[in-house]
Amino acid sequence: MPDDHPTPGTPEPETESCEQPEEEVPTEEHEATAGETQVSELATVEVLAQEIEDLRARAAERDDFLDRLQRLKADFANYQRRQERERERTTEETRRAFALRVLPVVDDLELALHAQGSEAAPSLSKAVEMIHSKLLAALREEGVTPFEALGKPYDPAYHEAVAQVDRADVPDRTVVEVARRGYLLAGRVLRAARVVVARTPAPPKPSAQPGPDAGTA
Image (cartoon, rainbow, N blue to C red; front, side, top):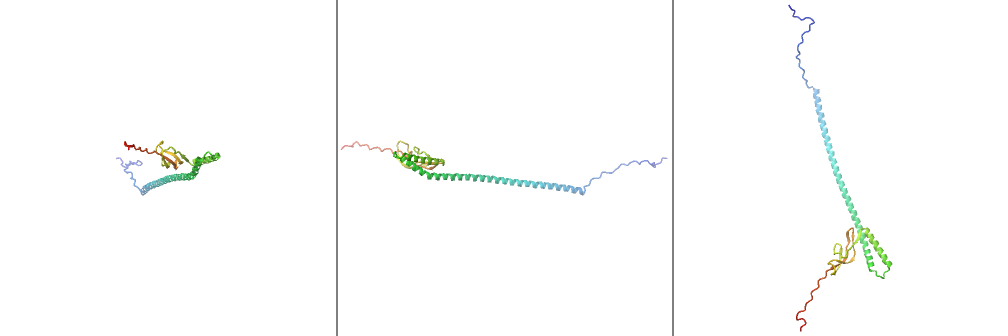
């Protein structure tokens, strides 16, 4: 009869293991780490948002600074233009005042030159001519020049009519005599010329024709 008891030293047959892998359960440490990560990310977003706001603020300040700088440049350019116009105006007024003081002397010298006859001493005439020429040269250096009026059509902007004469040989309102020369300062009228202007004579009235009974008793 066979022995049912196992023979000593014989290994027992292995039994199939029914153990299942354990499911990982979140621990408090894992939850704390995830929370810290979310907080860190949120802080990073906030920092970035603040940096963006700072950049926008600095950009706005820069734009404001550039705008103020442009306005200052425009104001300075306007100031320079005003100063330049003021300098030009002051210079022109100075030249005008100088010329208006000198011109009467020039007029007197021209009258003296025209009034001198053959009996005048040549040395005196020469001296007057030299003074006259020097004064005209000084006026030219200041931008003052005489303008031609004789033979020109009368223009009240340039001419001051002191008389009218009947002249049939020239067009009506033509300058036929210059009593005092006119001058320009920088192309504008400094002093109008005093002139005599021609006037077309009126046509003669027809003479009365004698009647058929004229001369009869």
